[in-house]
Image 1 (tube, each protein chain N blue to C red):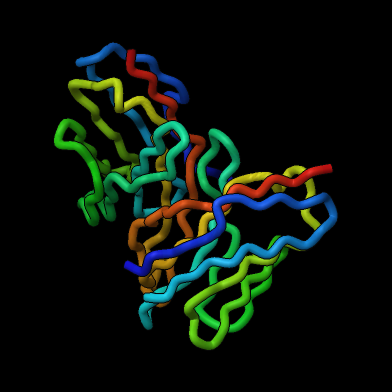
Image 2: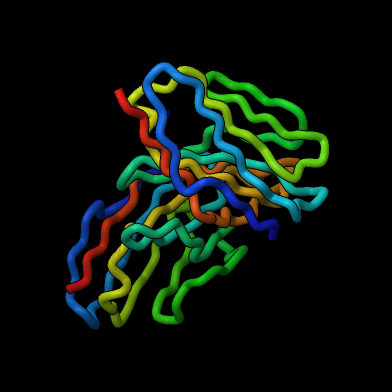
Length: 110
Length: 116
């Protein structure tokens, strides 16, 4: 399993764009990159998934360079409600269990 | 939209007692996962089931067992409870998918277990 490394914490003001970078140097050919968000005392929630290049949905964008050794989650114009822990996960395709590493605790300040 | 249901939401037990946690997956989801999250910790995978068969096993203690029933709901049985078992227990469900990408797992609200 590819090990992931991401910042322990980040602070941002409301309205700013937040970029959280995750490194996964040992990512395998069949691995996908997935990001989950977790609020205190709630279950993790899927944000976005990608394999290469750029993926965008209604809440975030995911940028993956050609070598796939890192990925960047971009949250546009964060609000106070985006304060949460964000997990970067690398996993095989299919129905493999999620392996959570140390996530990034994002604090959004008014 | 229907979500994953877990019961009970809160549970208090004494050491050495037993506990049963229940999980009802999203309709038409055939795969169930159990995760444990201790205080200040990250979620850790315990065990998963697909079509009532165990599919993957993580760091689940021997004191714990689980199964998936014909209606796809799952139960996590915990015996000889220890203080260290106090944690949030999440159940997640997904469809099986074709295997070409990582299937999204939908998490329930969790059961908070406190062992005294």
